[in-house]
Image (tube, rainbow, N blue to C red; front, side):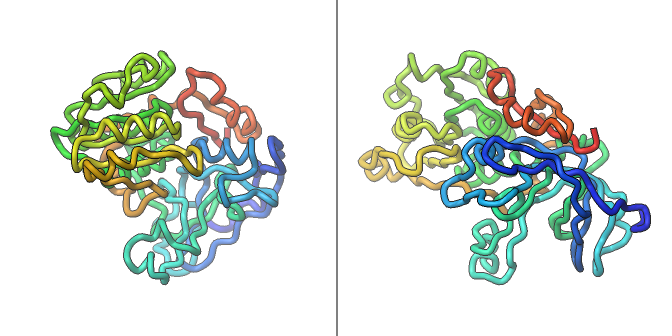
Length: 345
């Protein structure tokens, strides 16, 4: 596609206020040196999108102006800025939806996900990808192989969260991993734990349908925490990953970790909660959180394209750009796992 073939405007889905989505015609975003214009193919609906839609904020991130949601994106490069290889036009890509400054202490240390000047898709005030086109830096538009679908390419973003989680949890072959929560991130974490070599993956969830689903996606055992006391069941796991955000699940999971084991908090939960500090201290448990990712797309592309992680079958809802509100509400259905928006549908 040449620049002459590009339209002057595009359709965009906009969060205009709490639980208010509008469709707008907007000018095509401007791409500068080192950037590419991506024609968006598919965008996953994330829990953070739903939270902004329903509550207008996540912690200190407050929606105080119209915002375009959506950060799990794939597409095709439609145009490139100065300094970018023009042969990239027409290339299918997965979007890593962040723009770090590249100059701060964290960026220079390789921790660009913690950049204090980060511009991240669909995080106020930065617009996301529920639109026909979006702009990203050349290096953050990752080329994907032909055997990877647009859907899977979009879901490399939550897979990147799972890869970061496994790295922080030090998961290695033969480990036993406990995961609380069988929602989208919990399910992707279960698959990724197996891909990292975990011998046993135990998933807990209160909902029977979700426990059954976990067994189809990497879990070797699914536990109902309402009937099994995870803290005292003698699980003695190498790593505990919380993908639920529930204080009771976090506390019980920590107490199930063996001496010198690892705990990683992934789920969005209460900003403050009580932790079993005595267990953490006496057993020298390493506890950390996950905030996005760094340098994960190559690994994510390998896991998805090789079949070690199945992303395509996670898609349970497909919506057009004018159905974004319906897509954001689709999580109300307990059978829903991952909904995608297709701007050109």
